[in-house]
Image (cartoon, rainbow, N blue to C red; front, side, top):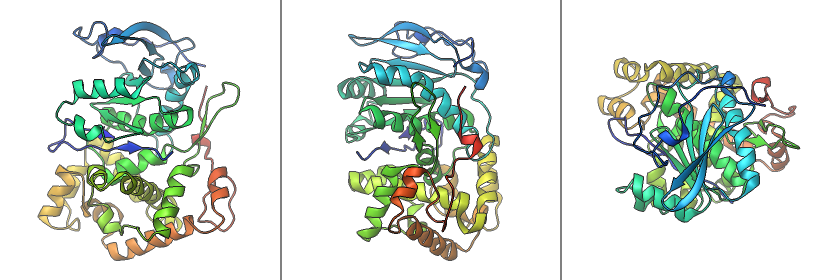
Length: 378
């Protein structure tokens, strides 16, 4: 989930789950909110890229309330942790920088953030709730409905231990939100921001301490949920899907929200690879415009984005069909039908094995879809 304090209307995006580093100088861990010296000013950030990774992390004490923890600075990220599980603690130090490299290369080359990303990983849900009530007192009741998930606010990802596999899944998802909040000058539409966050979840764990390999199609949780919602005839048409936010779906229940995530995950794959790549250039253009801060002006000046109200919704709340019309084509009926056909191909019988292998299940016969850019690590 992401909460943006900088947009005209604060929006949030929820994240739920179904079931070798180079030296870099960064601000002290104790200078961030919640640390032992929370009131100390932050140092001016420096650019963080692949060169920011450390051979050895810098570890300092960090506390939240009466709970003692540590801040682990790996150059690209500062992990504020009260984790008890040593496996998550150790592997997260490799996972987070590797995920960042994936974000920056999976679809188009993207810039580095201007400083290390702060990630809060609590060992227990009660600590996560206490932190949330302290930082987001007005919205805390909504967040309390998240049984297994996380959120991002002002470029900080806030998670808790939900098991060895799922914690990394949420870290990949929320890591994307933290990255875009720090790098993109204009937010993506909610459906695309959440869809790409789900797209970034697909991963194969490294063996014997090796970095993980990110494979966007290898996402069994989103695939399984997509298959279930199609079988139960709960598929949401494209034009309706882009009107909602995760909060809207959460109000209807956890299962409905998981269905939303599954559909926007499939939608990003559709825009990236569907219809022979017809929509790929629009996706690339939209990402570039988000980085450069051109989405709002493009939509407002567009002759095909839709009504004045639709353009306002796209700029202010990041929802609605205006972005689809401007960047991908104004025949939304046709696009919606193509998207539904693409989803039906994904969930066709026998495709679970292809998803597990990281293959595009919509192709008749395909080798493992692991782009060179997705194989990241030292």
